[in-house]
Amino acid sequence: MVGLKLPLLLVLLHAVFGSAYRWFNWQFEVTCESDAYIAPEDESAAASFLRDQYARGSLIKVVGNGHGFGNLTTCVDTARTKKPSYIVSLTNLKHLDINREDMTVTFGAGWDVYDLIQELKANGLSFNNLGVEQVQNFIGAVSTGTHGTGSLVGNMATQVVGLRVLDSQGSLRVIDQTTNAEELKAFRISLGALGLITEMTIKVHPTYLVKKTTRVLNATTDYAQMYKEIAQLYKEHDRMTVWGPHFDWDSKAQDWAIEPTYFASWWEPTNYTGVRNCTLNYCANGCGDCKKNYICYDEVSDAVSCGPEGVCTHQFYAEIEHFFPAEYLLEAATNYTLFQQSQTPRMKAPYNEQMVFQFRMLKGDDAYLSPVNTYNLGPESSGVFAVLEIDWMQEYNNFTTLWQNQELAEEFLPRFGEAYNVRSHWNKMSPANSTYILEKFPKLPEFLAIQERQDPKCQFVNDFLVQQLGITRCSDYLSM
Ligand SMILES: Cc1cc2nc3c(=O)[nH]c(=O)nc-3n(C[C@H](O)[C@H](O)[C@H](O)COP(=O)(O)OP(=O)(O)OC[C@H]3O[C@@H](n4cnc5c(N)ncnc54)[C@H](O)[C@@H]3O)c2cc1C
Ligand SMILES: *[C@@H]1O[C@H](CO)[C@@H](O)[C@H](O)[C@H]1NC(C)=O
Ligand SMILES: *[C@@H]1O[C@H](CO)[C@@H](O)[C@H](O)[C@H]1NC(C)=O
Ligand SMILES: *[C@@H]1O[C@H](CO)[C@@H](O)[C@H](O)[C@H]1NC(C)=O
Ligand SMILES: *[C@@H]1O[C@H](CO)[C@@H](O)[C@H](O)[C@H]1NC(C)=O
Ligand SMILES: *[C@@H]1O[C@H](CO)[C@@H](O)[C@H](O)[C@H]1NC(C)=O
Ligand SMILES: *[C@@H]1O[C@H](CO)[C@@H](O)[C@H](O)[C@H]1NC(C)=O
Ligand SMILES: *[C@@H]1O[C@H](CO)[C@@H](O)[C@H](O)[C@H]1NC(C)=O
Image 1 (cartoon, rainbow, N blue to C red):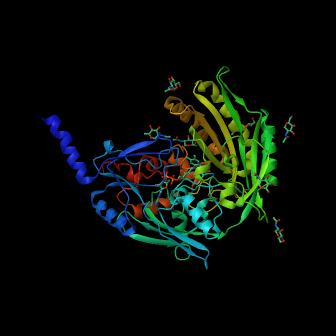
Image 2 (image 1 turned 90 degrees about the vertical axis):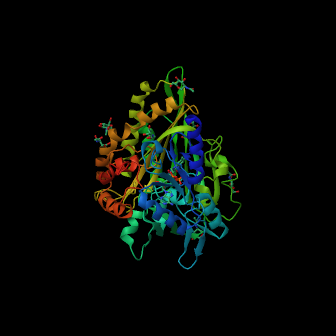
Image 3 (image 1 turned 180 degrees about the vertical axis):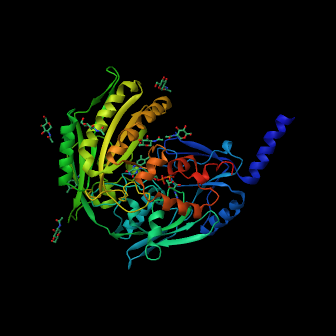
C-alpha cells in the first residue's frame, strides 16, 4: 500500500507547489532539476516572490535563454539540498520605451536580442555591439559580457546606462550612470549573482548600414606565417572576424587535417542606399557554403550577426573563448595552435568531426567583471584585446567524446593564462580557480561586497559562482 500512497502524495504535493522543472542549456549537456519554473507577471510579482522565499532561504537561479557552454546558469539540483530550488525567468516583462531625446531605450527583462533588434529597426534605431547570434535574452547576453568584434567596439554591456534590480529580499535598487556610476560597473556584468535585473536602459543610435567584405584566405601549417598574415589584416581592418583555420578529423590518420582555405569578414562605414542584402543569403552568416569572396550591405546588427532564421546547423561542441591583450596575438595564436596539436594523440575518437579556430578584437572596458577589464593592464598595453575561440565539434549526442574534449579544452588556461594575461568568457567553460580570477579581475573584492549586500543568505549562488569567484562566505550554501 505504501508503494501506492507515496506517488499519490507526490502528485498532491506537486498540485500544491507546482511541478518540478528540469533545466537544460541550449545543447542539452548541462542540466539540473529544480522545484519549479517561476515566471512572474511583472516586477512587483517578482519582488513578492523573492520576499516570500527570503524567509526560507530558497535557492534561486535567474535564467535567460541558456546559450552557454558551462555551469554558470545551472540551478542547484534538488537532490543536493533540502532548501527549495527555483528557476526564475523574467520573460513576461515585455514593456519598452524609446527616449529619442537621450537616444536610449528602456525595456523589460523579457526582451530577447533578436526581438529588440527588430523593434529598434522598426523605429529607425540600432545598437552597436552584439555577438554572432541573436538568440540570447538581452539581459542574459549583457550579464556575461557578450561581444562581437572591433578594436573600437566594446562588448554589449558597455552600452548599458541604467537598470533596475531586485535583491534577495525583493527590494528594488535603481542604478544608473548619473546617480551611481561606480556601482553600475558592478552591475553591467553581474553573472546573475547580484539579483534579478528587471529592466535595462541602453544607448542607441540612428540605424546605419555597414559594408561587409568576405575574403577567402589560404591556410598553411606554417602557423607563425599564417598568424602573421592575420595580425597584418587586423592592422588594416579594425572591425574584423577571422573564421579559421578549420581542421577536419581524418579518422584514418587519427589526426586533424587543416582545410586549405579559411575566410575573414570585415565591416566598414558606407553611404550605400540600395537593397540590404546580407541576410538575403545566409551564407553570409555562417550558414551553407560560405568560403567565397563577396560583399554585402545591411543594417549594422544584421550585417554583423545572425537572426534565428539564419542559424542552419547547431553542432554539438566543446568551446573555449579566451581574451588577452591584442599585443600577444601572434605569439599566443601560434602557441595555442601548437599546444592543441600536442593534445591530438589523446583525442583518438572516431566521433570527432571538425575543429574551428576563430579570432576577433574587442575594446577593453571598466566593468568589474568584464573579461576585457583594463584594471591590470600596464601602460604598454593599448587596451584592445584579441579574442581566440576554439570549437571542437563531435558527432551529435556523443557525450563521451564531448566530455573528453572538454577536459582537454580546460588545459589551455593553466598553460597560457599567466603568460598572456588571459581571461575566459564566463559562459564558455571557464575553469574554476578563484586565485586566478582575483588576479585578472582586480575589482573582484568590490563586486563581492555588493554581492553580499544583494544576497546575504547566498540564495543566488551555485557551485560555479562560489568556486570561480571565491565566495567563501557561501561555501556552505547548500545547508546554511
Ligand atoms: C551558439 C552560440 C554562439 C555564441 N556566440 C557568442 C558570441 O559571438 N559572442 C559572445 O560573447 N558570446 C557568444 N555566446 C555566448 C552567449 O552570448 C552568452 O553565453 C550569453 O550570456 C547567453 O545568454 P542567455 O540569455 O542565453 O544566457 P543564460 O545562460 O540563460 O544567462 C546568462 C547569465 O545571465 C544571467 N541572467 C539572465 N537573465 C538575468 C536577469 N534578468 N537578471 C540578472 N541576471 C540574469 C544568468 O543568471 C546567467 O548568469 C554564444 C553562445 C552560443 C551557444
Ligand atoms: C557542469 O557540472 C557538472 C556537475 O558538477 C559536471 O559534471 C560537468 O562537467 C560540468 N560541465 C562543464 C561544461 O563544466
Ligand atoms: C590562394 O592560393 C591560390 C592558389 O595557389 C591563389 O590562386 C590565390 O590567389 C591565393 N589567395 C590568396 C588570398 O592569397
Ligand atoms: C559618405 O558621404 C559623406 C558626404 O558626402 C562623405 O563625407 C563620407 O566620406 C562618405 N562616407 C563613406 C564611407 O563613403
Ligand atoms: C549585395 O548588393 C551589392 C550591390 O548591388 C552587390 O554588389 C553584392 O554582390 C550583393 N551581395 C550579395 C551577397 O548578394
Ligand atoms: C611560445 O612559443 C615560443 C616559440 O616556440 C616559445 O619560446 C615560448 O616559450 C612559448 N610561450 C609559451 C607561453 O608557451
Ligand atoms: C561515443 O564515442 C565513444 C568513443 O569516444 C564510443 O565508444 C561510443 O560508442 C560513442 N557513442 C555513441 C552513442 O556514438
Ligand atoms: C589557477 O589558475 C592558474 C592559471 O590557470 C594556474 O597557474 C594555477 O596553478 C591554478 N591554481 C589552482 C589552485 O588550480
